[in-house]
Length: 153
Image (cartoon, rainbow, N blue to C red; front, top):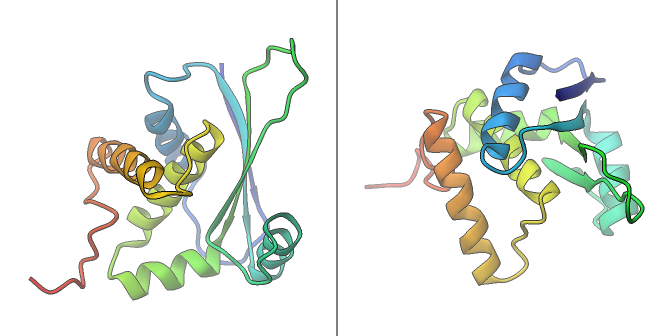
């Protein structure tokens, strides 16, 4: 079973359910075949409130990951929730010279890896997580998300 609860509470243009399902499945390939999660697409006020309340940063952010905190012994396919701020994604994609689709895909993959326990709190963890992201993005047909198209040759 694969189940995505996609919640859109923004007027911004956002990808469809099929896109998110494909990006999530790619991030989970070889890790989880059965999964359930929610992705909530929001505007800046909600993102800022959640980022402030859960991370102590009083500003909107691109993606927040909330892993499921199941009691010991409870075996469910629930991974957790992602909250993605559509206006931040749009601005970042423009500033980085990336397509909106590529940036949405990357932030979804990034968020899913966080749900699986990956992190980037130190350089070793960051290198590991970024390598995973690069590989998944390449499998999806996207360029390296850490190589901006605006970087001079």
